[in-house]
Amino acid sequence: MKKMMLGVMVMCALVLAGCGGQRGTLIAAGGSMHDENGEVHRYILQGTSGTIGVVTTASGDGEGAFTSKKDGFAKWAPGREVVDIGLRENAPERADDPAVVALIERCDVLFFTGGDQKRIVEVFRPKAGEGEKSRRDSAAYHAVIRLLNRGGTVAGTSAGAAMMGDVMFHSGQIEPSVKYWGGLADVQKANVRENFATTGLFDIADKGTLKLGTGMGLVHNCIVDSHFAERKRLGRLEIALDITGQDWGIGVNENRAVKIDRATGKVETIGGMDEVATAVRRDPPASWKLPGHVHFTLGQTPVAK
Image (tube, rainbow, N blue to C red):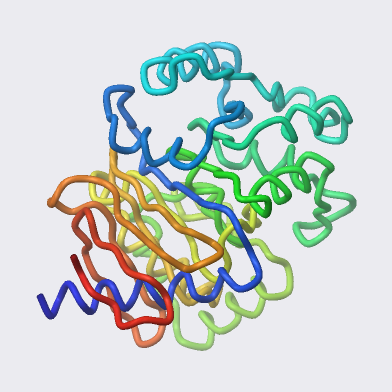
């Protein structure tokens, strides 16, 4: 129970950094989400009754990804309209198309499919000039924020979850990343941190080493990772926090999810009583494995129910 309480307190602080003055719900699923997973789907649809928008920007096969997810929602939301937002990597200019914005405005749920999270940011927050910090927010991006702030839900799996923080992983294998970071002297690490603070990008072009850049900024001061336990990603998340200065990380396991209410700070891990997610703190370094059905409300004494 003590370990559970610590884990809940960590999650409480994690979301506290991002919930002030904001509304809406985030559902971050850890990838490999089964259409038969009724629990996660019910949380995605909870409190909504309108149009469901599917964002397949991360996928290399947008039409196929939409058809697959539309069929998945048909089981859990019969009769509800499911639309393809239609933003693809090969037509990023459509993120400023009034018709796309109007389509997002019709929705009260957006679901971001898996694939490559870099594609999501390249379309929704394209570069206006040179460098990572030149990114601008497209009209479609502003529509996503408005959807949240009117009480809607943004859900995503795999890449669709990994894009949620201010900073996100572009890629990165565990062993090369740990070897690289462990081989640096303290002064070299300090230089890496300073460079990231200046450029907003970490990419040393070494094969397999983690790469970090701008995320969608739906939750602040937190890096989200997916496929977490299955791909043993704790090490790379710890390094990412060290490089970027983000205070918290949350790694979500496959076919499991985490719900974040941006208005109240209420957090819930979604899944069975086995391990659902891992919360990671940068300073002092620590991590906590969290089972399913952990509930609490920010501002009150955290209690594991």
